[in-house]
Length: 67
Image (cartoon, rainbow, N blue to C red; front, side, top):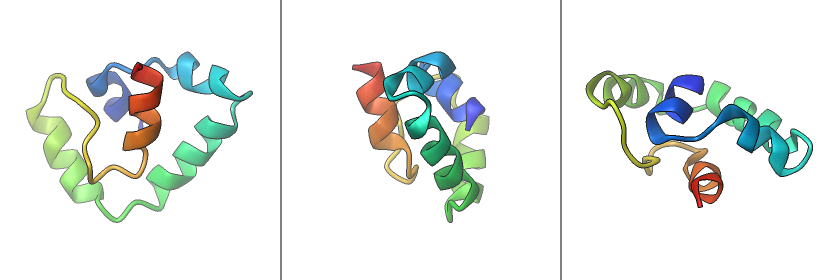
């Protein structure tokens, strides 16, 4: 999850600060249970930066944090 956050320009502490860490914990669970891990790894390997991807279960959260 940290690799995706860095790639899409989302700071770790910005997610934690949203609601006392609840969103961060939920995002970790989402990432752990994600069915798109292979797609995610491939995308991360080929992208130095970018927008949250639709295959990511945390894309909406990351977009909200980015503003």
